[in-house]
Length: 172
Image 1 (cartoon, rainbow, N blue to C red):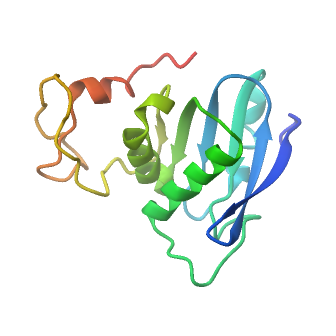
Image 2 (image 1 turned 60 degrees about the vertical axis):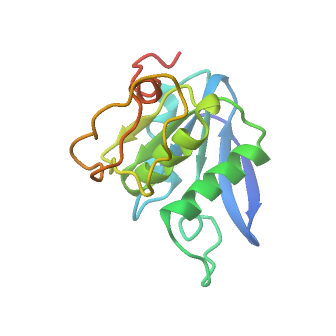
Image 3 (image 1 turned 45 degrees about the horizontal axis):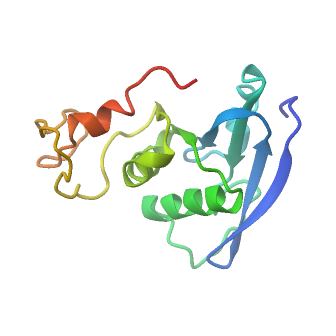
């Protein structure tokens, strides 16, 4: 099923391969919708029409959908972070709302934590909510929290001020 909204297609070069991207013009921080395993960008075809006037970006991670399928590529969460970053840089997108489904969750979480100035909100759907790597010591003046439960690895904690940024239900 194709969404009824017009979009521009892009091929974004990343590490010698092409990432297939659809960019729906609109306003506000871009909803960057990332698929899980084993999906592709079409998982969002019926959702996009419900976001009229909003900027939306969907793309296929390398190895999926219309993107290249390099045999020597490391299909990891860290690589997905790089692919997300490449897409946003190529399209010159500054403010985003990463929308992660399933296996793209860790990449979205880690990317958001690494680029808080670019993230308006973070949406996770049926997704893993664990950190793939240890968090660095908190540089801010805010108090540290206890380690987060259910899925966060022991000893990895996140400052409450940093996480509250992503818990805001308003992403207008």
